[in-house]
Amino acid sequence: MRTKVRFFENTADIPDPKRSILEPAGCGPEVAEVTDDDIQGMRFAYLVVELYSDDPRLPILQGRFQALGLEPLERRWDEYTEEELDAARLLIMSYDNNETVFGGPRLGTTYDMSEACPRCGAGARQTSAMFIDGEDLPKLEGRRASATYYKDMLVDEKLAGTLAESGLTGISFRGVFAAFEEKGPIELPWRQICAAHTLPRMSPRSTGIEPYKPCACGRSSFTNPAEVPMRLAYRATDVADIRDVNVTWEWYGEVKFNGDVSKAVFPCPLFLVTPKVRRIFLDAGVTGFDWIPIRVEES
Image 1 (tube, rainbow, N blue to C red):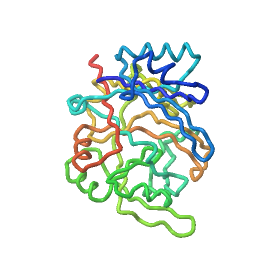
Image 2 (tube, rainbow, N blue to C red; image 1 turned 180 degrees about the vertical axis):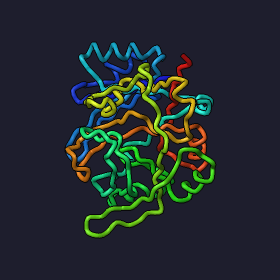
Image 3 (cartoon, rainbow, N blue to C red; image 1 turned 90 degrees about the vertical axis):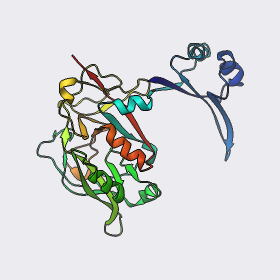
């Protein structure tokens, strides 16, 4: 595992960012990109640098930012080898947010709220097919798998069949419909992946996870600060009885809920799957997903 660090800085007010920032740090085009374009009368000038956290150029680059009074946006994430991914007990399954489709309660998906938190909705149990916005259908073209913005995992019918026949545990499927304002919903040749097993609370030794709008239930509004890699940890006893497809006890993301499910923005759990699931996705040519191993504490 190695940690990657990405900096983004607006350079509109910096005359020569290559000379003042990059050259002193020894950062060339292999790790840095400088853009200064005029698009329809608007200037877009910015700097992007990506380095590994153990790169000796990193502290020099940070020093240049500090000397110029700059506070660039910083993001850190971990990169894993194939061996590390294949050996993981469980993997966080995450889809590119820029390619997600909009779906959930505001499109007509229904939920049983009898065991959910009445304040945030964490624990809501889906009771219908998944309804997605019909205007997002172009995002599914040419893809075998996708996800809603709220981390509902979607696969085409053929991949759903492969998953169903593979002997995976803890997996089931629901239908997927496209919702339109001026006509009725249309069933799609896609299926939603559902998990039957919820893991216990993560270990307090988890990092890169924090509640930004805590609910009294203690279960929702968790988020991942961009500058800290997500590293979920579980006790060995908590993963002794896992399935191939699981979800977290914690629910992540924004919350807007006043009791009306049809207008709700629910938080959502993360999918944690075994490497077997990842391998099936890769063999099917699926792209757009990140897979992040959990850490298991033996004591």
